[in-house]
Image (cartoon, rainbow, N blue to C red; front, top):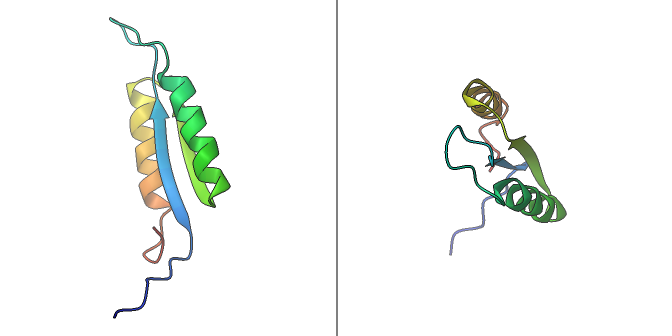
Length: 73
């Protein structure tokens, strides 16, 4: 049986947006914060974006992908 992979760190990108030009949502930001807190408890490094516009959304994704080393999950 193969040995489990040993990751250096675990990362998660979580984005919750309630505010849209049309048809705003109600609980996405709350859900994103709850998920973020849960994953932090199991040692994930979290990148969290709340109610970001399209520019901020792309910036968060770009920054997130640049910070993950090869040996991370």
